[in-house]
Structure formats: C-alpha cells, structure tokens
Length: 209
Image (cartoon, rainbow, N blue to C red; front, top):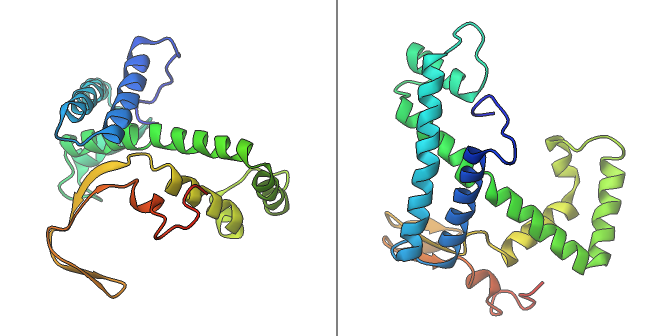
C-alpha cells in the first residue's frame, strides 16, 4: 500500500522492517521510554525511518503524475499541487508512513494473536462469537458495516485489549486542566502504566477475565 510493491518473506529490507517493528513494540511495552529499552526502541524506529526515506526518494525519481500507484505517489502529488492539504510536506509523509508501519502492523498482529489464544482457552465464548458471526455475516466476507451488528464480538475484542494492552507502559500527561465525565483532571497528571489500572481488582472484580 505504501511502497507499491510486495516483499518476499526472505527479503533483507522486509526482514529489517519486521524485526524493527517487533523491537519497538517489545521495548516500549516493557520499560519506560527514558531508559535503555526506550533508546533501543528509538534506534529501531530510526531503521524504519531510513527505509521510508529511501522509498520517498525512489518515488520522487519515478513519480507517475498521470497514474499514481500507491500511498507515496498520491501524497507526493499533493505536495506538488497543494490542492487538498495545505502545508503537506515530504517530512509529513515520512511520519504518516511511520505510523502505518510502527503503529499499524505489530499492534494489529498481536491483538489478533491474543484474541486467538483466549478463544482457545474459552471455548464457550468462542462458540458464542462464532454463532454471532454466522448469523450476521453468514457466508460472505465481513465488512466494517457489520461491526454495529456484532456486539458480542466487539465486547470480546475490547476485553482482550483490556487484559493485554499492547504497550502497557507508555508516558502520557495532560497539557492543561480537563474535565472528563464530571471528574477534574489537573494539568500535568501523568499516566505511565497502562496495565495496572485495567487489572486493578478495585475496578475489575474479575480482572483476569
């Protein structure tokens, strides 16, 4: 989608991208971003960044303005024309693509793997999910329009993400005072551990699912 080509599983660039993605997710998920693990994650993200920069350069050399082939072509044409997105730059394209690779690949994969694991450990829930999918989707392929008709499937996915957050230790802080559902949150409030709260028995009596 991004590069306009598919990689062989043994391709050196593909393997580097895959390994870097796994490293980023693993390191960020096990430690604070300011220690060694955080720097390892940053180093791996730079590897992905370098590959993306090379692809942008390659696309600029062979840009097909009459028939854009992929994400890069469409974005680079917009940079030239500035018709829809004011101020779009090559640097913006770089970071949007990094989001696709780093935030959109390993996260989806791990969510699906955890879901499959919990389905094999809870066959009664697996049966309920299967029945709902059979009734709503039938023999066709699932689409986004089915989502609102699959409440039990949605609940199961959300429960998996509660029990197994993909990046359990991530630094966030409020930049200004905020009110959420009647609760006042002061400026500078920090949330570092995304695993403890969803597993706290004070809020989740059956925290292990």
